[in-house]
Image (cartoon, rainbow, N blue to C red):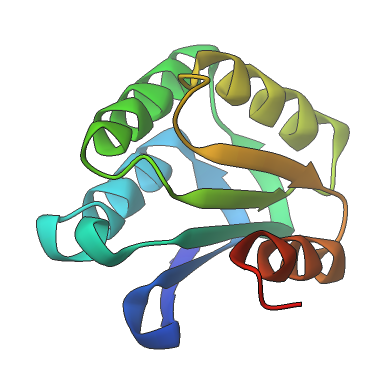
Length: 129
């Protein structure tokens, strides 16, 4: 499986690890899992780590679909903090496109080149530092 989902801190955190070849359909399937009613109510943060992603097969149409799902989820819980680790220029660019589609008054998002920086930012945003 190219996408692994781990639940952190009793479910308030979700870690999404992308490895190998990742497609837009796989991302959408993962979103369906993490945004189910029970998870969505208690979620405070997500860490999306693409450090081990070797091929990112996600189109601009996929990004629009992904951001639509995020925007619908943000109508239920608008306080989710999302750190995205994008280790290649393509991943970074697609993440910037996704950020452009996300409603500005909802999720707080930031892109990082490494996981350590993403983890530190999440801690800072949650007030754990």
